[in-house]
Image (tube, rainbow, N blue to C red):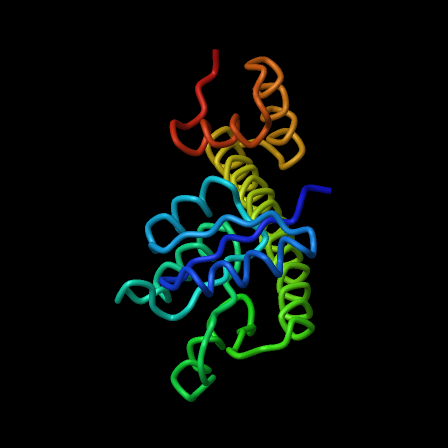
Length: 192
């Protein structure tokens, strides 16, 4: 299992140091920055378990950055807030994690929030990647079905004959069946 990694973004160096010290004591590897650009760049490079940051860093909103990190399957974000109020709660409802840290907070509360966020973030990422894999397989099967339909219609083949023809094409070209099917769908079938 890889080392648990956290990227922290905050404009206050004292907040960064408090979080860094506390979380390093718990065995987390920490990367900390005072600019949103560095947070994004580093998160994309190291793929941390979570990013911890406030709603703003240096006058720039971090919500868009959080959405980018989530949509690109990089990680999930735990926000630092003074008071979890209405608009912020609406924002949280659209994120992977419904998690935030308020200041002041106890170490126990920090550790529990971070541990829950890290574990949940990993599970979410794992499920998203599995979903992408399933979607890709389904797309491949749909392409094979389309190619079989083309062969059945244009070459007057049965479904079994069309499947056998696709399988032979794939083996002759040393390609996965989905790629051979894609060629039939894109360019039609040419008898050699």
